[in-house]
Structure formats: structure tokens, C-alpha cells
Image 1 (cartoon, rainbow, N blue to C red):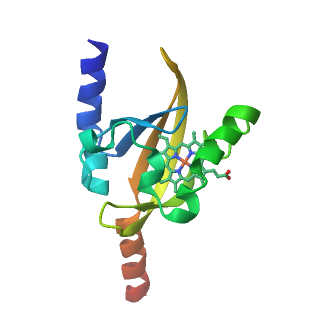
Image 2: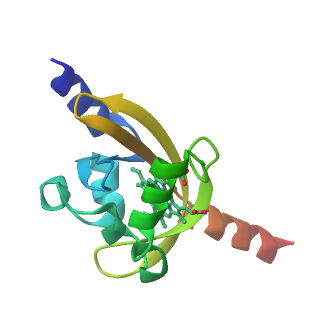
Image 3: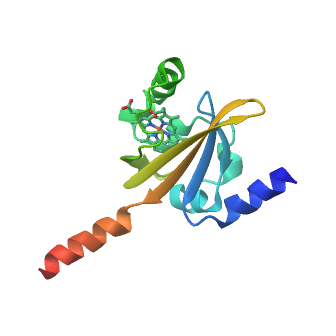
Length: 131
Ligand code: HEM
């Protein structure tokens, strides 16, 4: 029942939602995340979340998580950050990332909420053009 509950949330939340384990492996990928990144959930389950970002961060993302697990120092959890995501076709886009943490039955999990800022950027450009 809990699993079905989670599935219905993942199908409905308007923002992209991604769940990973302590090693960065994707355990859930919402419908909005599928649309945003261009991958189906089944292709990504078990893969490292680092496949969704450009190289500069992807080669270090395991370290980012490891640093947090060792020190408890939060750099994004509970704070949020604007970062760059990378779609399946290699194109990149600005996104607002919020990360939460929870204790799961098989260890700690992290939940990421992603808001695509592409439209926002367009709106701001358009506003500037109008001024
Ligand atoms: C930390 C980038 C997605 C979970 C970080 C940091 C960066 C980063 C730059 C730490 C920076 C620092 O040390 O100052 C990205 C990018 C993403 C992404 C570019 C684009 C897809 C995600 C997602 C999750 C996640 C989807 C969770 C589902 C974490 C965790 C940490 C972290 C747990 C360590 C805790 C913390 O720093 O507060 N990420 N991340 N990341 N990220 Fe990501």
C-alpha cells in the first residue's frame, strides 16, 4: 500500500522528484522528471544521479554526498541551490534543486525536488526586452 501511495505521488507531483540512496543510486523518478530529462524511470533505476548533470559536477557528486555523510555539513539540504541539469540529449538547463533527507528501511534516502527555470529565464529576458 505504501508503495502504491508513493507511485501515485510520483505520477502526480508537477515538479520533477527524484529519490536516491546513500550511494547516489536512483530509486524513484517521477513522471515530471521523465518529461524534463527525457529518460524513462525504468532506464534510470539503479543508475547514479550524476548522469543527470554536466561533467563538472557529475565527476564530484559522489564526493558531495560522501562529504555530507561524513561531516553532516549541509550545503544543499534544507537550503536549495540553482544548478545546471543535463537532459538525455546532452542539452543543459538551469534548475532549482531542493534536497530533503529521510531514514528509509534500507538506510538513508535523499529526495530531490527540481524546478525547471528555463521558462523563468525566458520570462525575465522578455521582460527586459519590453523595458
Ligand atoms: C550535493 C549538484 C541533483 C542529492 C550537491 C552539491 C552540488 C550538487 C554542487 C554540493 C555542493 C557543495 O559541496 O557545495 C547537483 C546537480 C544536480 C544534483 C548539478 C543536477 C541533477 C541531485 C539530486 C539529489 C541530490 C536529484 C537527490 C535526489 C545531493 C546530496 C548532496 C548533494 C544528498 C549532499 C548534501 C548537501 O550538500 O547538502 N549536489 N545535484 N543531488 N546533492 Fe546534488
